[in-house]
Length: 399
Image (cartoon, rainbow, N blue to C red):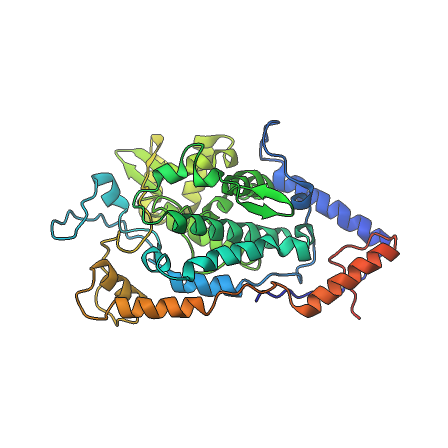
């Protein structure tokens, strides 16, 4: 169950005016550098404001547990290229795919779709949709809101990918008007949203002054930023995004330098709005996150091209990555056994069945707020009706 904690803040009218001025300034800083076209999606009033009380926080315990048990953290890329292997049961890859085949975190699609676990992501998505019914998003801090939108997006896209699995190449699912990214199946505060609405029309517009927000959007394929094995949380959301940025930039699926040409992922094309002077701004961004092994090559590159793509789904059977020796209960060893279709009786299948049982018991569909917090919020709402002063939802009484 998700809980939030609140603390009382006594605010007089003068301090209220000061807070309003601070909030206005922060909003201007957050969006002033992001160009917006008149015909684009308009940010609803329910999503446009924010609170300043950091004691109001959402914990994502159920989502944390679900991701921890369904996501394999592959670690940082060493830029190893998959060598062609010919043998029974082996899928041949194109040269382009072999550059990126050993990268990106993996998701237990094969096991999840066979069990009730698949319902867990839908239940959590629906639970997250209800959060504003109990506490308005505008009462949450900007960091809290960012974590919320990223978790909602990633939970929802996993739900959609599970519906379409098995699929090896997800290009048709992710491109075009009929893309799952355009499917309006999410409802927040009475607004029907698509995954693209969340990414481009809410997060990029409201938080786009920090470019690393783009690395929070997993899209089910090797060519996208990583799905983390934990939920995003307000107290470390930018640290988590920075980790994703460093991993992506320093991988073959993010950046490659060949013959003085800087090849970058086509994923950056989705985030063009974050780079007003696209090539120069993107180059500076990559230099900021690239490590010493390629930094000088990036700096000396003569041309930047959107050239890297890998539409293969981040499942387990689809990878030929070797993990070496290890105990069967170790995630890496388990993945190795599964990927090899495990000829050892029970080495893979038994552990994955156990995983399914564990996950089924961990998904929560209860309210995301404790009774104590809900009681305080209800009392505050009653107080607002009686008191004409500008008390905000975040300013909870001590008694």
